[in-house]
Image (tube, rainbow over all chains, first blue to last red; front, side, top):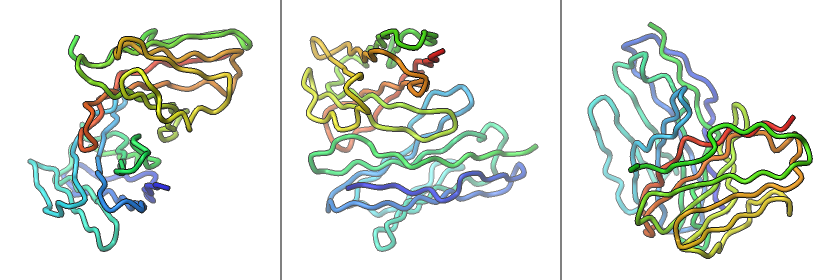
Length: 115
Length: 114
């Protein structure tokens, strides 16, 4: 069985602060794929990043960075110098390599960036 | 259009009526998924199609829910004898066949059962 846990239900920060969103996952598959999605108030989910289980290289893309650690089954997401437009619900998701092909989502973290 | 298209965007129906929700995936995407999102909640998996076949129906909450996909493209999700607890946003997503491919989501259908 697959499971994704996002323990932070809501986070509020002031603009320009850095913020890290936590994601912990469980899977029995040795090969799996991790994703982050953003859901702004408009409602449509927007894909942010994908990571394969065999690629632990962390990445920085502009103000976004990701920290993938297999040893702790974590895939955390950091926004530096947050902006009001970053306010959204952020979802972490997992797809295994077994028979279950669907994305298993965490419950999401509501990020509010205050001006 | 280039993205996943869902219709209608909003649907209000009376309890006990049947509803059909439609999803047009991105052209060339062989995998199609349906999810449900209740107010303020996460995404609940309903069903997954690879081509026209549905190898995973494990998420359908009851036998009132069914889905089909024809021609490897358009999919319809049907809810029979709707109940108030069916009220939610129904999201459709599509992706290429590979496991490492991201799914692209439509804007959803907001279903309200009154």
